[in-house]
Length: 417
Image (cartoon, rainbow, N blue to C red; front, side, top):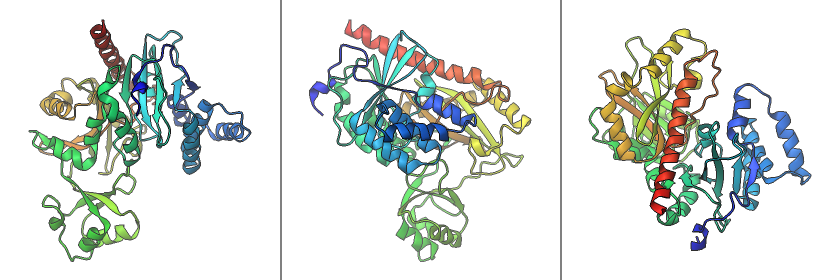
Protein backbone atom coordinates (compact mmCIF):
# COMPACT_ATOMS: atom_id res chain seq x y z
CA UNK A 1 0.00 0.00 0.00
CA UNK A 2 1.65 3.30 -1.08
CA UNK A 3 2.56 5.74 1.66
CA UNK A 4 0.57 8.58 0.06
CA UNK A 5 -2.63 6.70 0.82
CA UNK A 6 -2.13 7.83 4.41
CA UNK A 7 -2.49 11.49 3.47
CA UNK A 8 -5.80 13.12 4.38
CA UNK A 9 -8.06 14.82 1.87
CA UNK A 10 -8.94 18.47 2.41
CA UNK A 11 -12.62 18.10 1.69
CA UNK A 12 -15.04 16.00 3.71
CA UNK A 13 -15.86 12.63 2.14
CA UNK A 14 -14.38 13.46 -1.24
CA UNK A 15 -15.47 10.73 -3.63
CA UNK A 16 -18.12 9.32 -1.28
CA UNK A 17 -21.21 7.58 -2.58
CA UNK A 18 -24.29 7.98 -0.40
CA UNK A 19 -26.32 4.92 0.61
CA UNK A 20 -29.26 4.11 2.88
CA UNK A 21 -27.24 1.48 4.77
CA UNK A 22 -27.86 -1.45 7.04
CA UNK A 23 -29.66 0.14 10.00
CA UNK A 24 -32.65 1.40 8.04
CA UNK A 25 -32.91 -1.53 5.65
CA UNK A 26 -32.50 -4.15 8.39
CA UNK A 27 -35.11 -2.36 10.51
CA UNK A 28 -37.59 -2.56 7.62
CA UNK A 29 -36.95 -6.30 7.33
CA UNK A 30 -37.15 -6.75 11.12
CA UNK A 31 -40.54 -5.01 11.13
CA UNK A 32 -41.84 -7.44 8.52
CA UNK A 33 -41.73 -5.15 5.50
CA UNK A 34 -41.57 -7.00 2.19
CA UNK A 35 -38.21 -6.06 0.67
CA UNK A 36 -38.74 -7.88 -2.61
CA UNK A 37 -40.21 -4.80 -4.37
CA UNK A 38 -37.08 -2.85 -3.35
CA UNK A 39 -34.91 -5.72 -4.60
CA UNK A 40 -36.75 -5.74 -7.94
CA UNK A 41 -36.64 -1.94 -8.35
CA UNK A 42 -32.95 -1.59 -7.52
CA UNK A 43 -32.05 -4.62 -9.63
CA UNK A 44 -33.88 -3.04 -12.55
CA UNK A 45 -31.84 0.15 -12.15
CA UNK A 46 -28.65 -1.88 -11.98
CA UNK A 47 -29.47 -3.80 -15.14
CA UNK A 48 -30.35 -0.67 -17.14
CA UNK A 49 -27.23 1.13 -15.94
CA UNK A 50 -28.94 3.89 -13.93
CA UNK A 51 -28.11 2.68 -10.41
CA UNK A 52 -25.72 4.85 -8.40
CA UNK A 53 -22.94 3.00 -6.51
CA UNK A 54 -24.71 3.48 -3.18
CA UNK A 55 -27.87 1.95 -4.62
CA UNK A 56 -25.80 -0.98 -5.87
CA UNK A 57 -24.43 -1.64 -2.40
CA UNK A 58 -27.88 -1.28 -0.84
CA UNK A 59 -29.15 -3.73 -3.45
CA UNK A 60 -26.53 -6.25 -2.33
CA UNK A 61 -27.71 -5.89 1.27
CA UNK A 62 -31.38 -6.25 0.34
CA UNK A 63 -30.52 -9.35 -1.70
CA UNK A 64 -28.97 -11.03 1.33
CA UNK A 65 -32.04 -10.22 3.41
CA UNK A 66 -34.49 -11.68 0.84
CA UNK A 67 -32.54 -14.91 0.35
CA UNK A 68 -30.62 -14.05 -2.81
CA UNK A 69 -27.21 -14.24 -1.15
CA UNK A 70 -25.09 -15.55 -4.03
CA UNK A 71 -26.48 -12.99 -6.49
CA UNK A 72 -26.20 -10.24 -3.88
CA UNK A 73 -22.54 -10.95 -3.14
CA UNK A 74 -21.75 -11.06 -6.85
CA UNK A 75 -23.35 -7.63 -7.23
CA UNK A 76 -21.46 -6.34 -4.21
CA UNK A 77 -18.17 -7.58 -5.64
CA UNK A 78 -18.74 -5.74 -8.92
CA UNK A 79 -19.88 -2.53 -7.22
CA UNK A 80 -16.89 -2.46 -4.86
CA UNK A 81 -14.45 -2.83 -7.75
CA UNK A 82 -15.60 0.57 -8.96
CA UNK A 83 -16.42 2.36 -5.69
CA UNK A 84 -14.97 1.67 -2.26
CA UNK A 85 -16.03 4.69 -0.21
CA UNK A 86 -19.57 5.26 1.05
CA UNK A 87 -21.36 7.62 3.37
CA UNK A 88 -24.40 6.46 5.29
CA UNK A 89 -27.18 9.01 5.05
CA UNK A 90 -27.66 10.28 8.60
CA UNK A 91 -29.73 12.68 10.63
CA UNK A 92 -27.17 15.43 11.09
CA UNK A 93 -26.48 18.08 8.47
CA UNK A 94 -23.51 19.39 10.45
CA UNK A 95 -21.69 16.43 12.00
CA UNK A 96 -19.35 17.16 14.90
CA UNK A 97 -17.14 14.17 14.07
CA UNK A 98 -16.44 11.93 11.11
CA UNK A 99 -15.76 8.23 11.59
CA UNK A 100 -14.09 6.14 8.89
CA UNK A 101 -15.02 2.47 9.27
CA UNK A 102 -12.66 0.06 7.51
CA UNK A 103 -14.66 -2.88 6.19
CA UNK A 104 -14.03 -6.10 4.28
CA UNK A 105 -15.79 -7.14 1.10
CA UNK A 106 -17.86 -9.93 2.63
CA UNK A 107 -21.38 -10.85 3.66
CA UNK A 108 -23.43 -8.62 5.92
CA UNK A 109 -22.59 -10.62 9.06
CA UNK A 110 -18.80 -10.31 8.92
CA UNK A 111 -18.38 -6.57 9.47
CA UNK A 112 -19.34 -4.74 12.66
CA UNK A 113 -22.88 -3.37 12.14
CA UNK A 114 -21.63 0.03 13.29
CA UNK A 115 -24.56 1.90 11.74
CA UNK A 116 -26.83 0.80 14.58
CA UNK A 117 -24.39 2.30 17.09
CA UNK A 118 -24.19 5.72 15.44
CA UNK A 119 -27.60 6.00 13.77
CA UNK A 120 -29.09 8.61 16.11
CA UNK A 121 -25.94 10.65 16.75
CA UNK A 122 -24.40 13.74 15.17
CA UNK A 123 -21.41 11.66 14.08
CA UNK A 124 -21.00 11.10 10.35
CA UNK A 125 -20.19 7.56 9.26
CA UNK A 126 -18.15 6.67 6.21
CA UNK A 127 -17.44 3.09 5.16
CA UNK A 128 -14.22 2.32 3.29
CA UNK A 129 -14.10 -1.19 1.84
CA UNK A 130 -10.65 -2.76 1.61
CA UNK A 131 -11.04 -4.85 -1.52
CA UNK A 132 -8.66 -7.38 -3.10
CA UNK A 133 -7.39 -6.08 -6.41
CA UNK A 134 -8.55 -2.50 -5.82
CA UNK A 135 -6.44 0.36 -4.51
CA UNK A 136 -7.53 2.42 -1.55
CA UNK A 137 -8.43 6.03 -2.35
CA UNK A 138 -5.50 8.40 -2.42
CA UNK A 139 -5.64 10.58 -0.49
CA UNK A 140 -7.89 9.14 2.21
CA UNK A 141 -11.12 11.00 3.00
CA UNK A 142 -10.94 13.46 5.88
CA UNK A 143 -11.87 11.81 9.16
CA UNK A 144 -11.40 12.36 12.87
CA UNK A 145 -11.08 8.71 13.85
CA UNK A 146 -11.02 5.31 12.16
CA UNK A 147 -12.21 1.93 13.35
CA UNK A 148 -11.65 -1.52 11.87
CA UNK A 149 -14.99 -3.30 11.48
CA UNK A 150 -13.79 -6.40 9.59
CA UNK A 151 -14.01 -9.64 11.58
CA UNK A 152 -11.52 -12.45 12.12
CA UNK A 153 -13.28 -14.66 9.54
CA UNK A 154 -11.36 -16.14 6.64
CA UNK A 155 -12.93 -13.85 4.05
CA UNK A 156 -11.77 -10.78 6.00
CA UNK A 157 -8.11 -11.77 6.23
CA UNK A 158 -7.02 -9.76 3.19
CA UNK A 159 -8.57 -6.59 4.57
CA UNK A 160 -7.02 -7.12 8.01
CA UNK A 161 -3.56 -7.69 6.52
CA UNK A 162 -3.81 -4.57 4.36
CA UNK A 163 -4.90 -2.42 7.30
CA UNK A 164 -2.32 -3.95 9.63
CA UNK A 165 0.46 -3.09 7.20
CA UNK A 166 -0.21 0.65 7.66
CA UNK A 167 -1.85 0.71 11.10
CA UNK A 168 1.23 2.10 12.85
CA UNK A 169 1.29 5.06 10.44
CA UNK A 170 -2.43 5.80 10.31
CA UNK A 171 -2.86 9.59 10.55
CA UNK A 172 -5.73 9.47 13.03
CA UNK A 173 -6.60 7.21 15.99
CA UNK A 174 -7.32 3.68 14.76
CA UNK A 175 -9.66 1.69 17.00
CA UNK A 176 -9.97 -2.11 17.04
CA UNK A 177 -6.62 -2.75 15.30
CA UNK A 178 -6.26 -5.99 13.31
CA UNK A 179 -3.58 -7.38 15.61
CA UNK A 180 -6.20 -7.74 18.33
CA UNK A 181 -9.08 -8.86 16.11
CA UNK A 182 -6.99 -11.87 15.06
CA UNK A 183 -7.16 -13.22 18.62
CA UNK A 184 -10.95 -13.64 18.49
CA UNK A 185 -11.07 -16.88 16.53
CA UNK A 186 -12.53 -19.62 18.73
CA UNK A 187 -9.36 -21.65 19.22
CA UNK A 188 -7.17 -18.58 19.81
CA UNK A 189 -9.64 -17.08 22.30
CA UNK A 190 -9.27 -20.02 24.65
CA UNK A 191 -5.50 -19.55 24.77
CA UNK A 192 -5.88 -15.80 25.29
CA UNK A 193 -8.32 -16.07 28.21
CA UNK A 194 -7.10 -19.26 29.86
CA UNK A 195 -6.22 -18.94 33.53
CA UNK A 196 -8.61 -16.13 34.49
CA UNK A 197 -10.01 -16.99 37.90
CA UNK A 198 -13.78 -17.41 37.82
CA UNK A 199 -13.85 -18.00 34.05
CA UNK A 200 -14.88 -21.22 32.30
CA UNK A 201 -13.89 -21.43 28.64
CA UNK A 202 -13.52 -24.98 27.29
CA UNK A 203 -10.79 -25.49 24.72
CA UNK A 204 -12.10 -25.19 21.17
CA UNK A 205 -10.08 -27.60 19.05
CA UNK A 206 -9.77 -27.43 15.25
CA UNK A 207 -10.12 -30.95 13.86
CA UNK A 208 -10.12 -32.08 10.25
CA UNK A 209 -12.79 -34.35 8.83
CA UNK A 210 -10.56 -37.39 8.39
CA UNK A 211 -9.61 -37.46 12.05
CA UNK A 212 -13.23 -37.06 13.12
CA UNK A 213 -14.10 -40.06 10.95
CA UNK A 214 -11.48 -42.02 12.89
CA UNK A 215 -13.26 -41.07 16.13
CA UNK A 216 -16.70 -41.80 14.67
CA UNK A 217 -15.53 -45.27 13.58
CA UNK A 218 -14.04 -45.80 17.07
CA UNK A 219 -10.54 -46.28 15.70
CA UNK A 220 -9.44 -43.35 17.87
CA UNK A 221 -10.65 -41.93 21.17
CA UNK A 222 -11.92 -38.36 21.37
CA UNK A 223 -9.46 -37.79 24.22
CA UNK A 224 -6.62 -38.66 21.82
CA UNK A 225 -7.62 -35.70 19.68
CA UNK A 226 -7.24 -33.37 22.67
CA UNK A 227 -6.94 -34.11 26.37
CA UNK A 228 -9.74 -31.67 27.28
CA UNK A 229 -12.27 -33.31 24.96
CA UNK A 230 -14.74 -36.00 26.01
CA UNK A 231 -18.29 -36.87 25.04
CA UNK A 232 -20.62 -35.07 24.93
CA UNK A 233 -18.99 -32.49 22.66
CA UNK A 234 -20.16 -29.48 20.70
CA UNK A 235 -19.24 -29.46 17.03
CA UNK A 236 -19.61 -26.90 14.25
CA UNK A 237 -17.98 -26.32 10.85
CA UNK A 238 -15.00 -24.01 11.12
CA UNK A 239 -15.99 -20.50 10.07
CA UNK A 240 -19.73 -21.04 10.60
CA UNK A 241 -21.85 -18.50 12.46
CA UNK A 242 -25.37 -18.11 13.87
CA UNK A 243 -25.64 -21.76 14.86
CA UNK A 244 -25.17 -23.14 11.34
CA UNK A 245 -24.06 -26.75 11.68
CA UNK A 246 -23.91 -26.55 15.47
CA UNK A 247 -24.73 -29.85 17.20
CA UNK A 248 -24.21 -31.65 20.50
CA UNK A 249 -22.72 -35.10 19.96
CA UNK A 250 -23.19 -37.69 22.71
CA UNK A 251 -21.30 -40.67 21.27
CA UNK A 252 -19.33 -41.83 18.20
CA UNK A 253 -22.36 -43.08 16.27
CA UNK A 254 -23.94 -39.62 16.48
CA UNK A 255 -20.70 -38.14 15.16
CA UNK A 256 -20.85 -40.53 12.22
CA UNK A 257 -24.41 -39.48 11.43
CA UNK A 258 -23.46 -35.81 11.75
CA UNK A 259 -20.58 -36.16 9.29
CA UNK A 260 -22.81 -38.03 6.84
CA UNK A 261 -24.97 -34.88 6.63
CA UNK A 262 -22.10 -32.44 6.09
CA UNK A 263 -19.26 -32.00 3.63
CA UNK A 264 -17.02 -29.42 5.33
CA UNK A 265 -13.40 -30.43 5.82
CA UNK A 266 -12.60 -28.49 9.01
CA UNK A 267 -14.54 -28.36 12.29
CA UNK A 268 -14.33 -26.84 15.73
CA UNK A 269 -14.95 -29.25 18.61
CA UNK A 270 -15.36 -28.32 22.30
CA UNK A 271 -16.42 -30.06 25.48
CA UNK A 272 -20.11 -29.52 26.27
CA UNK A 273 -20.81 -27.69 29.52
CA UNK A 274 -24.31 -28.12 30.94
CA UNK A 275 -25.25 -24.62 32.07
CA UNK A 276 -28.95 -25.22 32.75
CA UNK A 277 -30.31 -23.58 35.88
CA UNK A 278 -32.17 -25.32 38.68
CA UNK A 279 -35.41 -24.78 36.77
CA UNK A 280 -34.04 -26.66 33.75
CA UNK A 281 -33.81 -23.54 31.60
CA UNK A 282 -30.69 -22.24 29.89
CA UNK A 283 -29.77 -18.56 30.12
CA UNK A 284 -27.44 -16.98 27.60
CA UNK A 285 -26.21 -13.41 27.94
CA UNK A 286 -24.71 -10.95 25.48
CA UNK A 287 -22.33 -8.44 27.03
CA UNK A 288 -20.98 -5.43 25.13
CA UNK A 289 -17.60 -3.92 25.98
CA UNK A 290 -17.10 -0.27 25.11
CA UNK A 291 -13.75 1.29 25.99
CA UNK A 292 -13.15 -1.43 28.59
CA UNK A 293 -16.55 -1.12 30.29
CA UNK A 294 -19.09 -3.97 30.21
CA UNK A 295 -22.78 -3.33 29.42
CA UNK A 296 -25.76 -5.69 29.34
CA UNK A 297 -27.06 -6.19 25.81
CA UNK A 298 -29.59 -9.00 26.05
CA UNK A 299 -30.54 -12.20 27.86
CA UNK A 300 -32.13 -15.22 26.18
CA UNK A 301 -33.95 -17.92 28.17
CA UNK A 302 -35.05 -21.32 26.82
CA UNK A 303 -35.15 -25.02 27.58
CA UNK A 304 -32.63 -25.76 24.83
CA UNK A 305 -28.87 -25.52 25.18
CA UNK A 306 -28.37 -24.22 21.61
CA UNK A 307 -30.03 -20.96 22.45
CA UNK A 308 -29.83 -17.59 20.80
CA UNK A 309 -32.18 -14.68 21.06
CA UNK A 310 -34.34 -15.40 18.04
CA UNK A 311 -35.19 -18.97 19.11
CA UNK A 312 -35.83 -18.21 22.78
CA UNK A 313 -39.41 -16.97 22.44
CA UNK A 314 -38.74 -13.85 24.51
CA UNK A 315 -41.51 -11.81 22.88
CA UNK A 316 -44.09 -14.43 23.82
CA UNK A 317 -43.22 -14.76 27.50
CA UNK A 318 -43.86 -12.01 30.02
CA UNK A 319 -41.90 -13.87 32.71
CA UNK A 320 -38.82 -14.16 30.49
CA UNK A 321 -38.99 -10.49 29.62
CA UNK A 322 -39.30 -9.57 33.29
CA UNK A 323 -36.15 -11.56 34.03
CA UNK A 324 -34.32 -9.92 31.12
CA UNK A 325 -35.43 -6.47 32.28
CA UNK A 326 -34.13 -7.22 35.77
CA UNK A 327 -30.82 -8.40 34.31
CA UNK A 328 -30.43 -5.13 32.42
CA UNK A 329 -31.63 -2.78 35.11
CA UNK A 330 -29.57 -4.35 37.91
CA UNK A 331 -26.50 -5.26 35.85
CA UNK A 332 -24.07 -3.02 37.74
CA UNK A 333 -25.13 -4.38 41.14
CA UNK A 334 -26.06 -7.88 39.98
CA UNK A 335 -24.54 -9.88 37.14
CA UNK A 336 -21.87 -7.29 36.40
CA UNK A 337 -20.82 -7.07 40.03
CA UNK A 338 -20.71 -10.87 40.50
CA UNK A 339 -18.35 -11.22 37.55
CA UNK A 340 -16.59 -7.86 37.74
CA UNK A 341 -13.05 -9.20 38.08
CA UNK A 342 -13.60 -11.68 35.24
CA UNK A 343 -15.12 -9.07 32.94
CA UNK A 344 -12.29 -6.65 33.67
CA UNK A 345 -9.72 -9.35 32.93
CA UNK A 346 -11.48 -10.23 29.65
CA UNK A 347 -11.50 -6.58 28.60
CA UNK A 348 -7.80 -6.23 29.39
CA UNK A 349 -6.69 -9.40 27.62
CA UNK A 350 -8.76 -8.92 24.48
CA UNK A 351 -7.82 -5.26 24.40
CA UNK A 352 -10.28 -4.14 21.75
CA UNK A 353 -12.04 -0.79 22.04
CA UNK A 354 -15.36 -2.42 21.15
CA UNK A 355 -16.35 -6.09 21.23
CA UNK A 356 -19.04 -8.50 22.45
CA UNK A 357 -19.08 -11.76 24.36
CA UNK A 358 -21.83 -14.36 24.51
CA UNK A 359 -21.76 -16.12 27.85
CA UNK A 360 -23.63 -17.93 30.62
CA UNK A 361 -23.22 -18.85 34.26
CA UNK A 362 -22.24 -22.38 35.27
CA UNK A 363 -23.89 -24.15 38.18
CA UNK A 364 -20.90 -23.38 40.38
CA UNK A 365 -21.08 -19.66 39.56
CA UNK A 366 -18.30 -19.31 36.97
CA UNK A 367 -18.70 -17.15 33.88
CA UNK A 368 -18.92 -19.51 30.89
CA UNK A 369 -17.75 -17.77 27.70
CA UNK A 370 -18.93 -19.17 24.37
CA UNK A 371 -17.37 -16.67 22.01
CA UNK A 372 -16.12 -13.13 21.58
CA UNK A 373 -16.32 -11.07 18.42
CA UNK A 374 -16.57 -7.55 17.07
CA UNK A 375 -19.48 -8.13 14.69
CA UNK A 376 -22.49 -9.30 16.73
CA UNK A 377 -25.56 -7.14 16.18
CA UNK A 378 -26.32 -4.59 18.91
CA UNK A 379 -29.53 -2.84 17.95
CA UNK A 380 -32.64 -1.03 19.12
CA UNK A 381 -35.13 -2.60 16.72
CA UNK A 382 -37.31 -4.49 19.18
CA UNK A 383 -40.83 -3.03 19.59
CA UNK A 384 -40.86 -0.80 22.68
CA UNK A 385 -44.42 -1.75 23.56
CA UNK A 386 -43.24 -5.35 24.08
CA UNK A 387 -39.75 -4.57 25.38
CA UNK A 388 -40.09 -1.17 27.13
CA UNK A 389 -36.89 -1.77 29.13
CA UNK A 390 -34.69 -2.16 26.05
CA UNK A 391 -34.52 1.35 24.53
CA UNK A 392 -32.97 2.94 27.66
CA UNK A 393 -30.33 0.20 27.81
CA UNK A 394 -29.52 0.38 24.11
CA UNK A 395 -29.27 4.16 24.27
CA UNK A 396 -26.85 3.76 27.16
CA UNK A 397 -24.63 1.56 24.97
CA UNK A 398 -24.91 3.88 21.98
CA UNK A 399 -24.04 6.90 24.14
CA UNK A 400 -21.01 5.07 25.52
CA UNK A 401 -19.85 4.23 21.99
CA UNK A 402 -20.25 7.83 20.81
CA UNK A 403 -18.44 9.07 23.92
CA UNK A 404 -15.56 6.69 23.21
CA UNK A 405 -15.30 8.00 19.65
CA UNK A 406 -15.30 11.60 20.88
CA UNK A 407 -12.74 10.89 23.61
CA UNK A 408 -10.19 9.30 21.30
CA UNK A 409 -10.72 11.96 18.62
CA UNK A 410 -10.22 14.73 21.21
CA UNK A 411 -7.04 13.11 22.53
CA UNK A 412 -5.63 13.02 19.04
CA UNK A 413 -6.54 16.64 18.41
CA UNK A 414 -4.87 17.70 21.67
CA UNK A 415 -1.66 15.86 20.74
CA UNK A 416 -1.66 17.46 17.31
CA UNK A 417 -2.06 20.93 18.86
